[in-house]
Length: 584
Image (cartoon, rainbow, N blue to C red; front, side, top):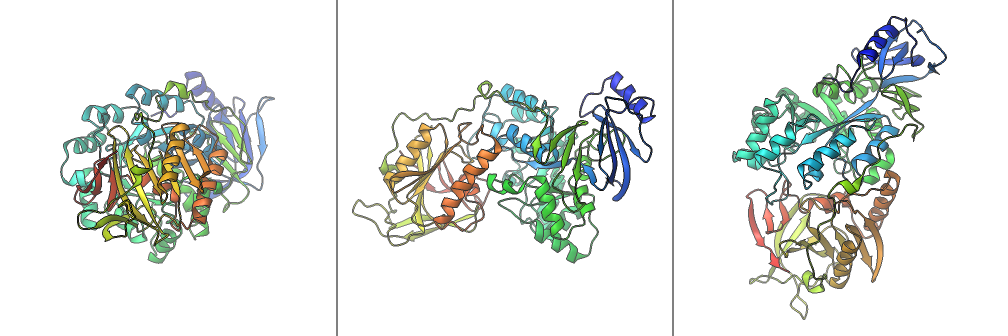
């Protein structure tokens, strides 16, 4: 499969440049070049004809006045980095993420489409094809389940077939509804089988899975899993024929321990290992993108050669793209990263599709300007009435107890039923414990609310509202019903986002006007906006890894144990509603 079209004229020119019968378009002189196929460094010339590499070796090319010549003596050249598991909607969007990635040496993205699935199918296709015009090569996953606990019009057999058969979709997944697979849900099994029938890869999601569960997953068609938490987890996946992706994200910064654990096992690094940043929220991107992931791996003790192979050749092989991507060799697309030192993955210069695309973190080439007006990303707000403070009153049940969601970590919540004091209106009072807050998920279409007490998100939190949720419902957290109502109203006024109110004033406002979940702003602005919110929540006593991911996942039904849904608090393990929703 050609990643980028190659005309007959360009093909003939490629061969002639290789034979030194036609002038090179680009000549990178004398770099120490990483051969990812043998894990050797050689001082070589790299000669480019148009978008592709024509020659790698010791002989100088035929040049003319149009040849761009770059003296790379004393520097190091590696293939362009590949992110095999991107989530491009974490407040930023796929276009701004691609720009950011290119600045930092990542020249190929394989991205999640979950946030696109509320669009009409023709708009999904149009957006993916628009991204295909970006210098960064863009491929996508076809999701099999919506993670919302709701019926969804795109997640039918016809919808899955349409998505999985799109030529830019190279894999199914990541599969998060494992319970549905075990229950032999017809639509999920169709998606799994159809993905593999098409010859495409199938990404799993199996944190803490046993050997027996991984066996079933592999039998069902899972070809890779990024959820290994220990070195032994990686080994189990490899032994059952899967690719094992080593992750370092804002919600699972596992990479240093994975590297150290693997070194302790004394096993060779595998050609079936890859690296991923796995959809970090914006603050972590202050450190970079795949260049940062590589740095973490190298500093933890992974040999640089192995790290670069896991971020270039291995994902290219996994997706069947290695004849075009993932290496510095003749015939490959000329995606390369120039480094000051072999153990420093931050690029001095980035070459993409045969031309210098970035230098010192600054783009040198035009990319793609999205036309957001072409897509139906308006945040849904079907409610006519304004938010009221009484929406955030939680009353105990007949036995005098209330549901309490206890944050085990940033994304895992366990529910207990506890007897808590009430105020003069009969609402749960939180005055005795500053770590408690009321959390309410509001389904504006169904005019329902699901409420609980939340322990662990911070202290003395007055009112925070978010449209950035997995389910698409509104989420409100706080101790002051008036502040909670005001925060939600402000989120509605700005067309979606996250708003924090303290002492009757807006303390932090993060507009996310695209679907209520992401921003059209440049990555630098989104990073600063998210850092501001995170700092304010830290000052309020939030101790978990990523408060932004927490907002997303309180309503995500693929995570244990208790989740907020439109129907009420769900026990993910049993699928039962244990506390029903209430009308607004």
